[in-house]
Length: 188
Image (tube, rainbow, N blue to C red; front, top):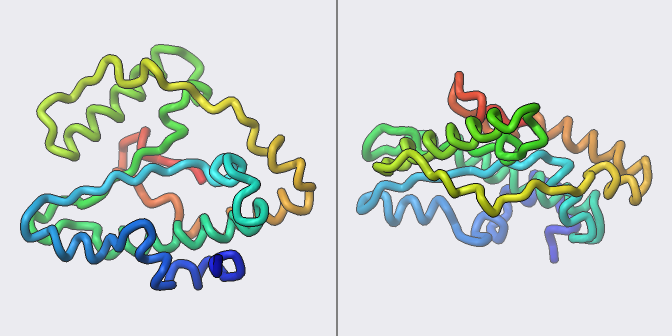
């Protein structure tokens, strides 16, 4: 695939990437006159994302370039489509995957409260009448994969380069959540 030899900036502006899996700009332009369109952005910590499929794209460094390219592309889209032109409301919101994970919290009550807050916020953002979902996380399980353990198998140089990739990405990802909403303050 040509993405494997491209820089993140080249990926972010390539016609193929902008239409993979769908051209979001064309989607908004085609359907926004007829329907409310809202986007929920799921943000996952960078090292966990790379480690989850470290063998893809010829290895973690190239996979990191591809992920960074799509992160740049998505951020560009979000910045342009921040507000729905039809109703003036914010057109996207963010869910931080780490805010769902129990390992972030010291007490079970804090996990339950954070998850309930995420569901309530999403329901409000999407205009759903029900703001509770007592069983939404019944089958959820946190990842037990240690990202640095997985990536460390590729060597210390690779891990250090991935930290450099992460530092460069810090300017654009994750997209900002709502101010004052702790569950929307994602980490990179």
